[in-house]
Image (cartoon, rainbow, N blue to C red; front, side, top):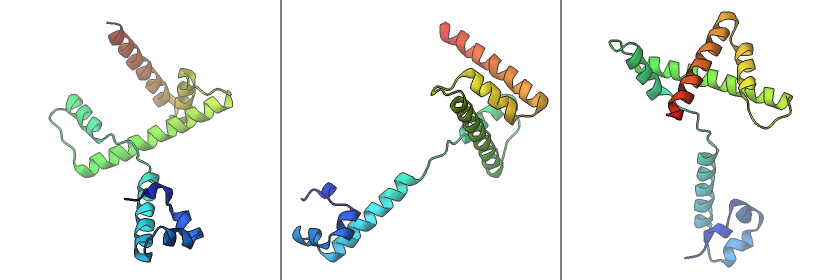
Length: 141
């Protein structure tokens, strides 16, 4: 079998003699081009994080007697993804402003203050600190 790694879409479109020299038919050329396009589309699709299972687990812990519909889970998932994206973008901007490549705690704290208004931001910072402290304590043991 021939090594198809040397062939790509540009080879076919720029130089029609290449595939003829290697003995490929026009139909095979179209098939390979189509396969490469679909592969490129699959690679291009950005996979966003999915929090559905975690939302369901937290609901079971907080309110074991309640349930949520699939539509509600999807809405909560998109909400969590949106907030996560906002925090990460804002923290990234903060690190670029301070001319650092590493995200620090201060970047996330300031992005939390900017994104969440008033008491909600302060409460989020408190809960975040508490969660990090609990994680560090459990890690030391």
